[in-house]
Length: 357
Image (cartoon, rainbow, N blue to C red; front, side):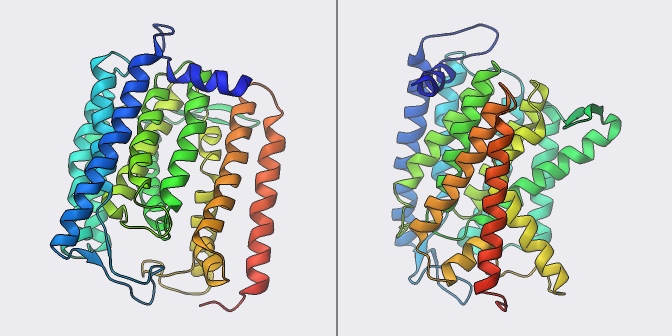
């Protein structure tokens, strides 16, 4: 019961101004959910009408042509809820201008979803431009808090580190958007824990996390297995960018980046392990593939629902660890448990799929 009270409290928190009525925040989240669902439904109809479909190939997890660009609904839902939050004074700060400008650029990723595949270089340029817009209004990393070391000042290194952080998160969410419901559920799960953590430290970023969760929830209505629409690059890049912004804002508010990142441990682990494995095998890491751990579980017979359930459980273990770590050292036990499950999962997969190429 205590955790649920804290959850409700974080929804109604605005920062230094103290507690406000939950009404505006709840309205903002509901607006994000409803608009997200409505716009996703419109995109679904339009993409079907014009035959803008993602057709299965040898790397696909789906078996029938499916509409994409559902991320437009996520973007619309987030900014609809954000507009309510800004109007009611729940979300304030110049950084929202940077995020809005970056969003406008990231919408160009719809080219990849409905026109033609964008080349890696094109996506990189797009991301760098979006980060440049963010840095025009938003903060960058000025220091990092390292376990056992304390705070380390980054000096000018904070600028390139911030750029790498945004680019990595965007690519991570893009890479992991490979089966029905996974990215949407992971985003909602992670944002719920982030909302709790930001609420606990009194940061207004909590409002942004709940609004993003609401917008993605509206999209998820159409993305649960078997998915009727995919979020596409518009959705995955926008989610990755927005969560990266949460991390930067959290660091400015006193939340150690490593604690924030622990909530995304499953994504970080899968991406880094798969990249390292492919490098050691001498493979072209830029080339598209189906070798992520969650994809290999699918090859071993796991359903999308089973994979989603396990990954959400792991994310929740790390999320609980991050939340508890802000109170006492008990969070480390959850980090160890989550890390043990990830390592055990890798061993299990490699024992049953050692030659997967």
